[in-house]
Image 1: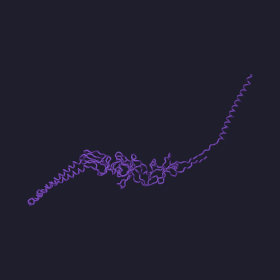
Image 2: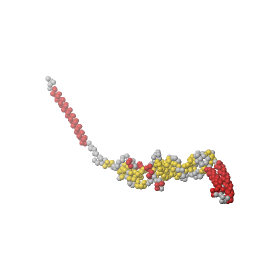
Image 3: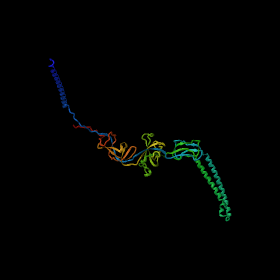
Image 4: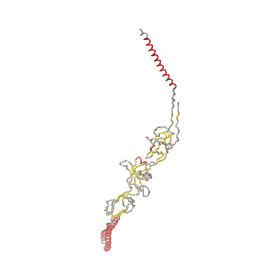
Length: 409
């Protein structure tokens, strides 16, 4: 009976505890919400700033001018002899002497003595032919005496000899036969003297000895080679040129003027050394292997005997820079400044402008432009990372402008 009143009291306590816990939780929640609201209302607000940076790519430019320019064709050429012979004797015999100049690399002038073939046999032949001539002349004198007697006899028989037998009586056939023997003897002497003269062999023109195939004591005949000689007055250079480039070369047979040629051999000659030549003519056929046209270039004094320049060496490859016909009213621009599809970067009003151009001709260094550029245009020569029409540009030599920022809230 004593436990009955204690049960309601326990329930009240639990209710009170629950209410107290709920009040505490609500109080904490309310304080947290109030704190968040206060923080949100009292924190500083960020201000949005829109900034625009004024900058431009720094570039170098070149100002172009329209004018008349001559392109240069750079091709390889082969050095050849303009005059070359293989020297052979015209008589048989033994070589008895030679000139000290008659050696490979030796230089000789026209008429210089080269070698001597033994003349003894030819001198004996002349003596024999002279004896034969003397004998024929003696027979001719005898025949003249016989003719004189025949004329006297004919005078006694005048009127009894017909005209057909008159020549026989006067021994005219015998006289003509002996006269022919005299003439043949004289011709034999001239031939013997000519053979004797041919035993001494001289240079046929100013030449350099490239090869020699005999020595003193060699037995030679007209079928054998004595030496190989090349003329030193001029050399030829055979240059291979693309067919499409022929129209830019001046040939003398067309208008009397020929393109000048500059020769360079950087592998052999000192730095900066050049030689000069001229275009002579076009060879009327293509090279069968390269399908290129061949142009003949003439070089005077190739061995530099009259000047202080390097000599040319036969059969070598050499750079030939052929000056082409002048091209009028064009801009000449270095090839590296012409970009894809023949476009050129132009700086106009401090902005990039991409120009399409018409290239008339390209040589090894320049492009020749007849449309798309005008005198005074500034072509950008600096490589740009970003290429687009309208981007800002600034010359490298211009004074730098301070960068600025414009802000808006």
